[in-house]
Image (cartoon, rainbow, N blue to C red; front, side):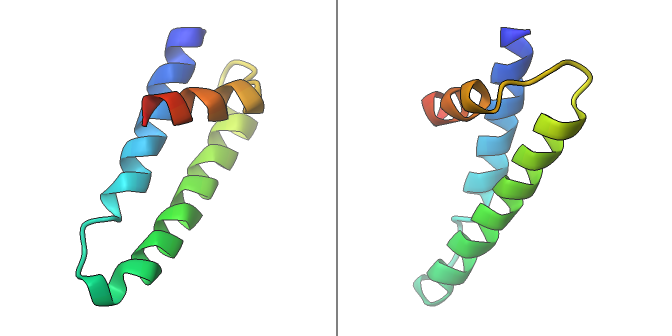
Length: 66
């Protein structure tokens, strides 16, 4: 279970960081969009994953993965 959570957290981090490749003019927009995508992924995983996911543990794993 912990390995699955770490893998999902890593995926969420990749999705979040993928939005950071842009010009300086669009930086804030890209950050905002990436945070929105991250929130949607986080919500979907915590609500719909096949096993129960502890939201705090999931977030901590994502932060450690960064």
